[in-house]
Length: 464
Ligand SMILES: Nc1ncnc2c1ncn2[C@@H]1O[C@H](COP(=O)(O)OP(=O)(O)OP(=O)(O)O)[C@@H](O)[C@H]1O
Figure 1 (cartoon, rainbow, N blue to C red):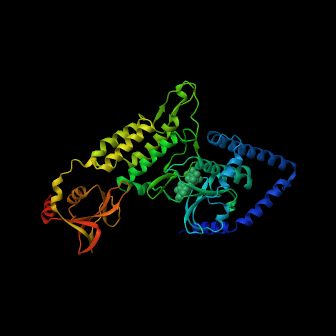
Figure 2 (figure 1 turned 90 degrees about the vertical axis):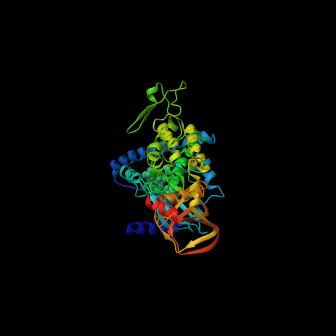
Figure 3 (figure 1 turned 60 degrees about the vertical axis):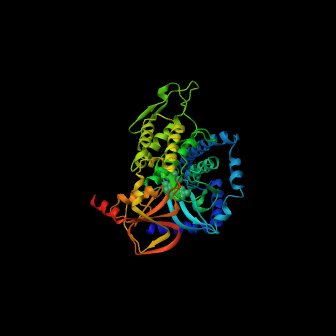
């Protein structure tokens, strides 16, 4: 671990244990501010007043930004108090009092606005704590502009507040779960959101994973977009749509960064007002008779999903018989020919075919005859070989629909002399099969079936 990172973790630990002290100091600091503190002459006062005026204006604007979320869901136009009660009063959620007993174990990530720590609760479960990034560029810019640490903390905190409000209202398996929050944590001075912990999305790692896992991420994304297109708040657009706004939790994609989400479709007078601009493509949508660019939010999300995710994750190594369906999805999303609902139907169709093994209809059933079946045994002293993309780095472990598909795979690998099917299944319900080039021992195991390739089968493959 780098020394900066260690320093960061140590300072975070300290911050967590010094909550009450910080709170006292903060109140004292606020008291000083209210009494008017600085004494640099009338000009300095005037300058300070103007700067403060600007900061107050920005704070008001951020407050206004939160209103649509109250208006759309609770009908409460004042907002603020409802939010406090709703979150702080929640008995199920993790609150301020729980934070002091937590131990920081890792820095999960940080961005322009926020920092995320992995911590262990007193009960030993892991959660992610999201707070304002004191070193982030949002905070830096604010401090350069206003030189008011307290005001800037409040200003930048609005983004986290907005995120928390959205997380309270938007509930979906592909949105990170909010487990609590603390408005005055003392941790770097401000608000903390308590989230389910995950793993930051690593595109490079995903590119090396089996197609099934890459498809899972894309499917999760489309399910999320379908939910966002008709969420309780209306149609939500993610203005900052990049892989780093997502994490995975046990392989499932989850949206974690919502501070750039907007809920209203833009208003328009003519069609050209409804312009969707991307670096390589532009799209124009019709302006509806009610003066709204209807469907613009969902199409913006969908095209972003296409350009940041589908292009890289979907076509590569798709099962041969599913390729036409996958290409159809690539074509319709790349040209925005279908809406999110229709796109989701296409994705669910691919999933259905994949799960039911319909895409394997053309496999030669006779291949399995090359294999002797030994039920209830596992092998030991295995001679593993590597294949790609394997579920295990040092071995060849692939998901299969059934023994026939596994036999086809084994027969296509010259080194493969046997494979075994375990009861372990992937998220689609396919079974994991281990392929190997040899083994020295057989041991009883009711959960495993061994398939040994006949010598004839091996030598035919070797000749090919
Ligand atoms: N629940 C979580 N579990 C694990 N990592 C997380 C979690 N939430 C966020 N992260 C990581 O922390 C990073 C920063 O969080 P977030 O994106 O909310 O901050 P940000 O300042 O808005 O970022 P950006 O500058 O990209 O907009 C994310 O990119 C992600 O990798």
